[in-house]
Length: 373
Image (cartoon, rainbow, N blue to C red; front, side, top):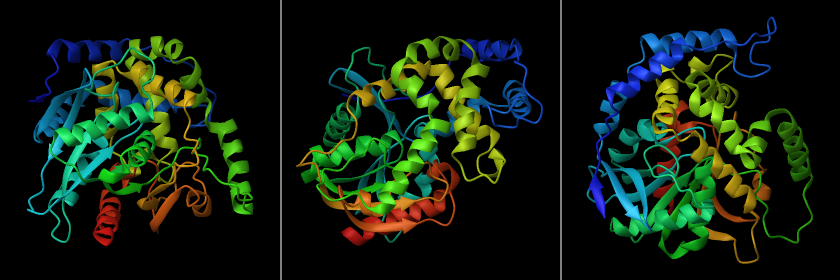
């Protein structure tokens, strides 16, 4: 059953948030350490002062509620999603899925570019992954890429879309890939801007030299940068006690990734504003979804994206490669598992493409789907 949904957080929860921020106990830091050991202390103090004194969650609520919001109960789980229909009559249904530590809020900047275009336009469905945002948390094991993919397909069928396109980055890429494998007859095309480092195609080919370089680089990157993923894949609950209880701790854990994974020339606000950063962190805080969201890492670590003999994605696939993205396999390696018909080397941008470069990103999505229909 699909129902209208309006976001409204009780005022007492917003007051409690500000009170907790005021009571933060700051750690020490080494001189001139910048972001070397995690979120930069001077910047985090600046950001949390703004959070307490100036950030307006009600403005974020108003923006969310300016779009059609719904919930649907699929297989006993409540899914929150935006459903924005195009101004054009012959629109392409497009399901867009976010990742971690982002949320459906990332995609708001894409909406006007994808629903009002004349050459090709889209009916957008933008859900929150189970355990993220306003979607329900599941306390049962097995909520991985494939599990969510099945929910998404049932949602699209419930909305009357038997043929639709899909787009995903980060965790959303893994979910979208599983959708393409499980329900290929219903999928027009798959557009990606990321693929997980757990991806392994089914192949008997010799590993190319560029793939060896990628795997070597990936190992070094994981050693230097991926401790967060190891913790979230093994002991997410222990980490969550602190993050669910301290808004500043939660902010530090999330903001570090936005700083490290964006094309920001050394200052995070060169590409993302304080309000955009804090809207996302505040969503995690108010919905208490840090544990349910990072627990997803545990689930996908039990079922990585290793392709079997019949898992080749044969539908048309487009890929937008942003220069400051976290490690990506070379095109030759990706093509061993996907029918790549469109590949774009983007001039700028990083991991959070919809937030950082919504015009470039939406343009590539439009070009891909226009060319395959």
